[in-house]
Length: 71
Image (tube, rainbow, N blue to C red):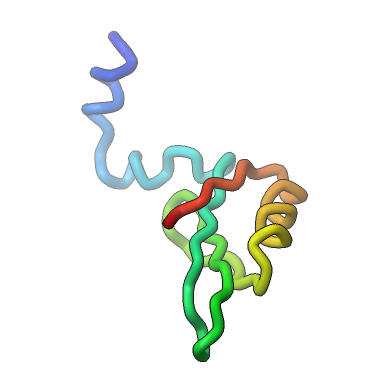
């Protein structure tokens, strides 16, 4: 089966789990009026709030995950 066909057949749950052990998403958020960076697992769980984007990226890498920016 072709890769694209397999991807189209993924359930919503399977799609959420895709990359859960390999990717972490980093997005800017405002907390108490301050810009900080939220780190989320691929399934959407918030894992951390970090004050600095570069520190967030380094933290993700130190935990053997690939950081991905979300804007």
